[in-house]
Length: 289
Image (cartoon, rainbow, N blue to C red; front, side):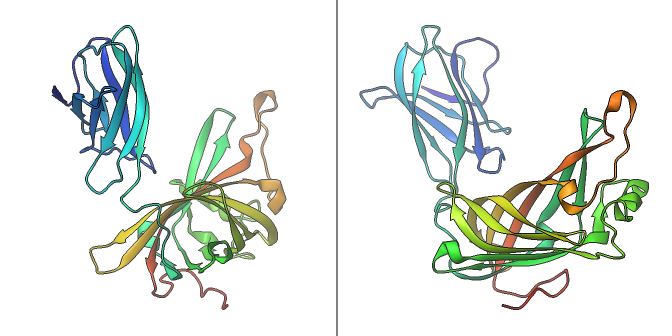
């Protein structure tokens, strides 16, 4: 039996969402379901949003589900179909073929055109304000012993952009970034430590607003592959949480009921593409060494 796309209505059948490691839908993914004898009982293709839904009930019991997609490593799991004839697989994550293999040693230059350096702050205790820096540069030095790899980055403080000129002006003032006195933010790592199959903790120091603090990045490696210009790229996602007071940015405005207008913490969100070899394209010259 082959089912393609989403069904209409009904409480029975198979439900799943197929995603890449960074959350994108895998539109061309296929789920194949076999019983315990190895016989195929169902085959279903994901829709444009990466979801799989079938409506024909399956006999209750255990099944093997294999998720496949061109360019991705297959993933197998066990599904239990309930007495209602339904199985919920939740989110199935596919890694690109060979994606767990780490980037080859050497220098990798950050591509600012295809990377994002962002931060999120809480506003009034009920919502979030998103900002990003538009001018930055950096490099990654992958060592033969991965734990000895290094990350260096320089960010132009005045390039902060939250989509509101008045707010950006305030963030550039001495109340926050004080870009006249501290024109750049820098990050330099000391070493890495493994946190999972494709996750690493980057240990390093962040210089922000004239203060240097140890800051760890939670780094996820997303894979390596060729680009249309003849180069090789590696992709990463990284997050960190900063306390404003640790960097002497103590400004705040208290509104009704004692709620601070701006949260005391910032969530840093990085989406990075790095090109094998090359020189820094934007940002000030990186430190030697």
